[in-house]
Length: 125
Image: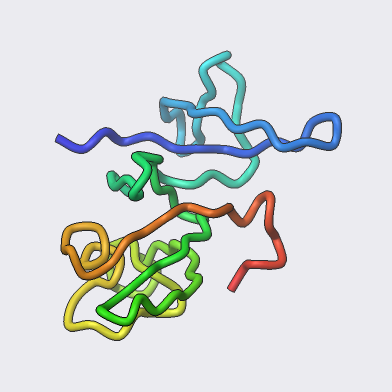
């Protein structure tokens, strides 16, 4: 069973601090310190990159794909708002099925988390 968890980034003292939280109450999340959470949050995809790091919505990943080792940069996006209930790559990868899943489960590509949209806002797509 996939672990359901979220990551939230809070700017404090000029630095981002990441923490995982749990719980729902009246449609809002409750943090581990029992505080209300109103900042944006990012869901765990259930997948890990080539280094074992958890991949979250909003992460910026580098894909090395194919026999020619073509490199590309993508953001992890949730497609549920567009009737596509899955995490995928933005921009999309040219393949026959979900690009993120394809890269993680096949030997044709590697995925490496290199940042996230909180710490690298210029990378938002």
